[in-house]
Structures are given as C-alpha cells and as structure tokens.
Length: 188
Image (tube, rainbow, N blue to C red; front, side, top):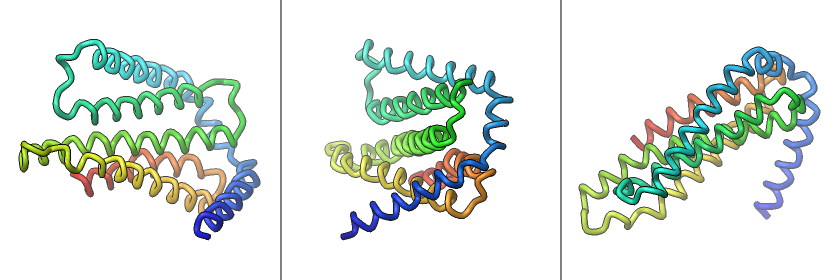
C-alpha cells in the first residue's frame, strides 16, 4: 500500500517535472558560460579519484583502518565527477537529462560526505572498543542511504515549490552545501 502511494506520487512528480522544465533557461545559460571551467575541474577530480582507487588496489600497505570508508567516498566522488563531465558536454541540452544528472550529482555527493564523516565515528568505535570495532559497520550503509533518501525528498520538494527558472540552482545549492553541512553536524 505504501509502495503504491510512493510510486503514484513519484509518477505525479515526474509528470510535473516534464511540464515545468520548459522554462528553465538560466541554468543552461550559466552552464554554457562556465562549461570549460567545469570540464577542467571535473576532469581533475576524476583523475585524482582514479589515481586514489588505483593506489588503493595496487598497494596493500595503504589499506589501513578506515580505508573502506575512504574508498567508498572516493567512488562516490568519481561518480560525481563523471556526472559533471556529462553535464558540461555541449550537446546535452535536454533539460530532463540535466535534471537527472543534477539529482545523481547531489545524491552521490551527499553519500561521499556521509562516508567521510563516518571515518570519525569508526575511529571513535575503535577507541571505545578495540576488540569489536566492526559491530556497527552495517549501520553506516543504512545511514548513508537514509541521507540519500532525505536528499531526494528535499529535491522533490524544491522541484514542486521553486520556480522552474531557479530549480536546478537551488537543488545544487541544497545538495552540495546545506545537506552535507547537516550530515557533518549530525555525524561529526
């Protein structure tokens, strides 16, 4: 019953998004102006993330205590960089695709911040009980997924409340600054 209501509300949101996206021109204009800078920074971030993942898998001596959290955070950052690279392509003017890429960017960025904040929790768990530091490890993924769902809900509210001309800018601002700050305040 709850899943049916959730599916119906998501379908209504998708139909409303398609109708409202036709007016979104300011984000596209900003994207056209800053495309080269965005491409440069995204490519730099992508290369750094790939190098870090390569070093993690190549050199076993680098695998230390919070390494699995840092690796997952790096993989989320890699996904954000790839989405930004797709977003700054000159032939992507489809507003629905841009909205999808913005949502993926926001979700993976919040997940990356959540994983980085859990490094402190994990080290505190080791300090508190060094013989069973893994006992709460399964809850970290649930917590990260919860923050991703909160991000989706906030994005849906922004999509329905905000005017279409400022929709993607506000979604990026909330997802890249406000929610990661809330993650840091709650976990850290």
